[in-house]
Image (tube, rainbow, N blue to C red; front, side, top):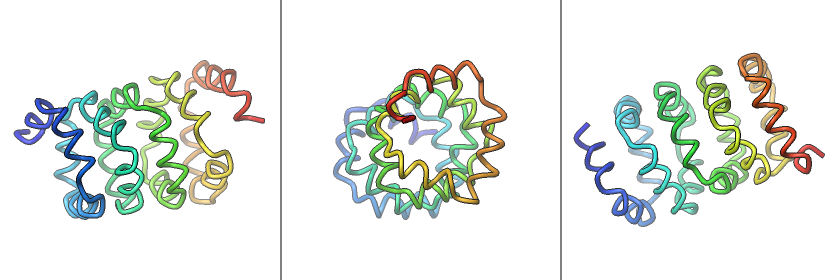
Length: 178
């Protein structure tokens, strides 16, 4: 909690620092300390984290393939409320580029995510998801969704989604759907 307090109180510094860090070194530390990372995330301020992510696209894109998908999924699963709040502050184009450039990682991570955590995050952030869809490469998304491992997981997620939110997302992304 001491580290989280320091991060929360120094967002500008953290944002600048993140851009100067080696993504592989950070990923190795995260991968080796999953429990610590899960606890830390729960104490972080979502706006500070989002600002750092939004300002460091290259770092995020390089970090993703070096992370262990199950470690990241476990941290997300343990911090559903934080993730719901974080998504509302993220720049959808930053996340879309990271997904588009890391299809294998996304496929592996998705199958480790809790369907209820993801469904709650989607249901709470319709505008973000609508914007994200317009930035995703349809073929990358299709390849992820078409994988056998993701199919059963996705069936569970879809059963938990709010139909009004899905209608909003689909209605506002006609180009993506065609």
